[in-house]
Amino acid sequence: MAAPQTCPVCGVKILVGIVGGDRVLFSAGPPGTRARLYARVCRYVDKPGCINKEGGSQTATPNDYYKPDAPR
Image (cartoon, rainbow, N blue to C red; front, side):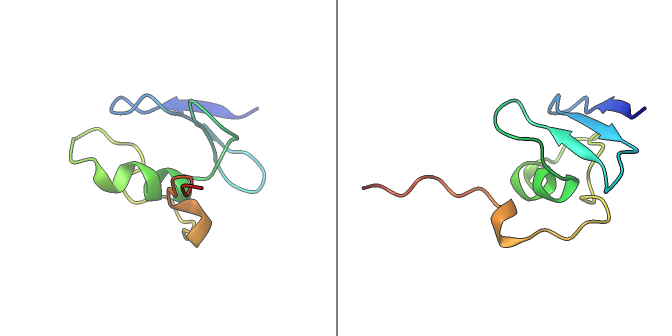
């Protein structure tokens, strides 16, 4: 079974040991990767204790970065 970790800085839960890579449980929306968490949150955090400072071993894709809805 996956071992959950909780980041003391942002409070996000990461399920470690999942087949296919760690899964990040965001407060809203579908689960994601450590790369997505890094692209959206961790790279902006300058506090000790972040458990995803390097973004894991996964490479971020253009879809991992936050994009607000375009006005219509």
